[in-house]
Image (tube, rainbow, N blue to C red; front, side):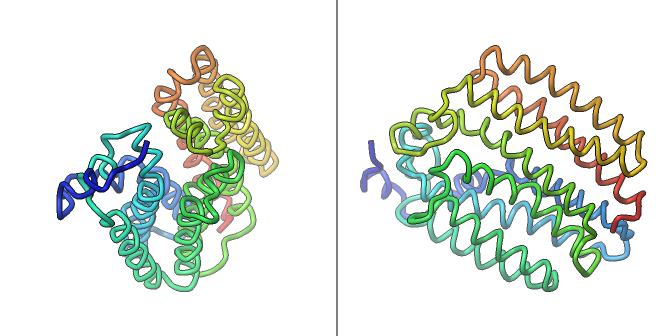
Length: 302
């Protein structure tokens, strides 16, 4: 099934509400939260440079994440015609090549805003923009891989914004404990992104996207995702205990135990329960991120 020229040209200009739908505000929360985790973990007083915090939040969420969603929808317009034909591009609410122009314009906006955050902020922005296009666009299209695709998205949703927030506030490279914790949570986010692939199962199967739900089946993919989410958090707990932060280790452990309960519910019906888990288990996951960030701040890791 393909998007026809007639469908794409019903409108000459995109509907404003369709543009907002295209850049998916609901997806902005994870990178914004991760950026704030980086800000907190840096140990730098937030009010010492509030504009850096605000600019970083705008960059991580509406601009870079919004751009990545627009690029993904443009490159996935034929897949969405199968999975979600009501999406703005396949439905014709965003006609012609407007989806591409919006993604390109937001890429330029991201680079311009990133340049205001200094060399570390700009470097991270360049990486994020390139990663967004590498994930979605041919000939690279890492989205085709159930390993590299979710890994790249997890890195850009959790690890990169965390690193950027710490680097921008510190005006330099973050200390190694911050980098290690950010990378661990980015690794665990691979599992979150795998669960997100359940909603596109049929379209991915028909169009050659080898997500883990396609290659392993929903049940096995869900089990892999649970392990991938849990193991990095166990390492975080161990590091917190090693760094003499037992209270924070205990709090993260409690949050992980609550996730294990949610995972057991998820595994009773992986495809049907995946959206439910994204609203429960993922919230517990990101809560642990902020707990770890506060611990790093108290350690003086920045």
